[in-house]
Image (cartoon, rainbow, N blue to C red; front, side, top):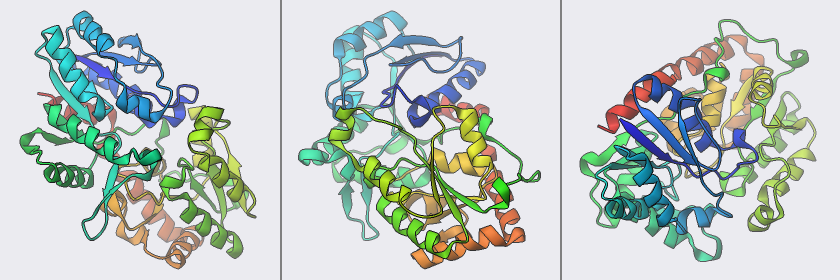
Length: 385
């Protein structure tokens, strides 16, 4: 099977912060081992030396990635690669890919991977546009573009059962019947970030550290995390290690959304909070996780998956989480909270109760056992046949 994988990279200068790139960088070698011939079309190469690579332009903004596909370039790639399958990691690009396949005379299967959902549902079933893609009122247009991508796809791949239910419900509201086209294929864990909790770490200077390793955008619910950090800081029993994943961003990106910088400054002003950077080095990132006692999930409603949560769990770190979306599906119910007071109690218990911590460290690690690259690659290829 020849696979042409179309990947948008939003952070080419900090690939370790781009979950889409991490996903295919881990998965492509496993797909190759399973017999697929993979070519990645992206602004930066991914996978290993056995994978083909076609360099594409970096879109200036997240809206250009969704609203300005280059059909001429797509036709040329299809004609040159003659793929059996084309995977569009940006769902909104699927209609353009379908048009390019038509023009190139290709019968390749078109699969869209719903790496990111531009919507979520309230508990009452109301559909909400993701504020991250609603600048200048563009949210409705992006949502309709996402639905057009679903309609154009032969396969629709999603991360989780929650994502499958949300995508199906949203599609039905626009008259799109996904039927047998929908498949659940979770991202693989990064085998570099795996540690058996049967061999505990020595945490930094014996201190209990909670790690927050997520993007600091406002739409991740970061203001709620700032409030939680303030309460944990006041209690003084836990130190927080907050990952600054982006570093210094360009003026263009700050102009579109400066919330990461604002949130970072608010957190840095709190006692017992340390802002750290892995500098794009996964080995350094692993050391920062290994020195922690537990992880904290983001408060992002439209979260169908979190590779940062999986990073913590694979390293044997229990993760506490708000009780919503995919987190409620995946994270042990004993570690889910509804109120800030419950979150503080969980954090302090994980910090001080060794038996409780070890139990949940083992459970966290075990829940990633089916996410090895080879197992996910098998599911991926099955979904494409």
